[in-house]
Image 1 (cartoon, rainbow, N blue to C red):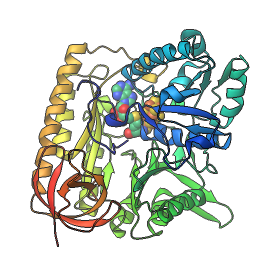
Image 2 (cartoon, rainbow, N blue to C red):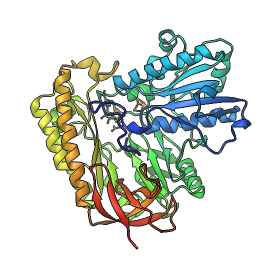
Image 3 (cartoon, rainbow, N blue to C red):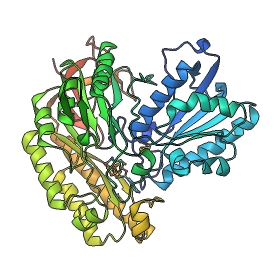
Image 4 (spheres, rainbow, N blue to C red):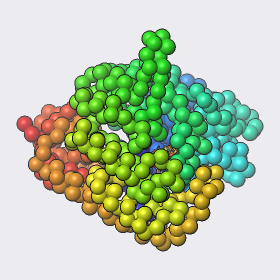
Length: 481
Ligand code: SAH
Ligand code: SF4
Ligand code: F3S
């Protein structure tokens, strides 16, 4: 999935975690009076945007049961860690955090530690044996049972629920917006994944794909807009396979239709989405994007590899040529579309020639940005069962470095092309470096930093900005009268 906040390198470059700057962030809503609650929970989230969105569901469920969120771990009666299993490194990070929580727990009697999310689902009750001081283990489809499990744990019982569901979408739960900038928000539109890419653990940790009731999605977006939000990002592992039958109105809702419904809430509400699977993104979606100015011209279209042979082993179900055609169609229907990607270096049996194919497809696609990883074998996946993880670590790293270097050049070139252009920018807040500057994004999802000067603007406003300069990661600009 795409990052909202770019590149705050937590890890060394050779295993880039998505949305690095948010990894491990602890959240607390600002709107709640901390004294209103008898007990407090602290939640730290890792992994993709969907996990961060789930933490907001968890906060909502716990709020209803009388628990308030806190940013201060020392104040917490309950500590939750919402975990990711996508690569081995992600799991190692979680284990390290758990050791730190263990120390806190030893100091504070009665404090409970809960593991949520994909690693909870993958390891199940084993967690309680492996990490003795974990009290609660809950998978992504079982968050409604959290209050009961907290009670069980308080009574000293084992508290585990990792049941996956075919229909849970938490459609009726209004997420508590945690640590929000008040301008941009994420809205889950589906859960799970049916794709079975051979390298990927998600189908095992998140279960079968299911789409959330369209009316509840539109209602949530409308409510966000009424509260002053100006941008929603519709989230799913594979948004283009969204499919919902509204029996009351006898209407079949595809992703294109859903996008349109959300876009029609207001021209002042920007709509983004993530992630698109290249095999599933339809011309209907592209034409809908072209038709509505407020649907952002930006697609995250993970290629994974540029070699047809590797793509087949990955079970991605498209070829190099098919992917290139998709990029050409996007550029034809939406000429100024931003495109980003995910790339894996060193998948099983990858040759130098396969690797060169990856570099050349990146060059062809001219990605504005990519998340780049070396292959990390995950237990239980098809690749782990069928193939040998046979590319030595030093070669994986060398190839990944070449991929990262190429992407750095492509990002810089893409930004340089924008110098002199004027974009409509949604202001998200102060720039990280200076309160004298605003930070916002253009439709293509590029970050633009510009001086506030004396304009009476605030976050959440749209403003025209002309690009005057750039770095590889950021455009720099000036407000245009
Ligand atoms: N649903 C999204 C991606 C979810 S996982 C999609 O299909 O595009 C995010 C990214 O992590 C993937 O696109 C892939 O590039 C990377 N990834 C997944 N499993 C991995 C593994 N075992 N090793 C390295 N990278 C992996
Ligand atoms: Fe994983 Fe593939 Fe599903 Fe994405 S589409 S979550 S990579 S199985
Ligand atoms: Fe990680 Fe689970 Fe997301 S494995 S990437 S948190 S779906």
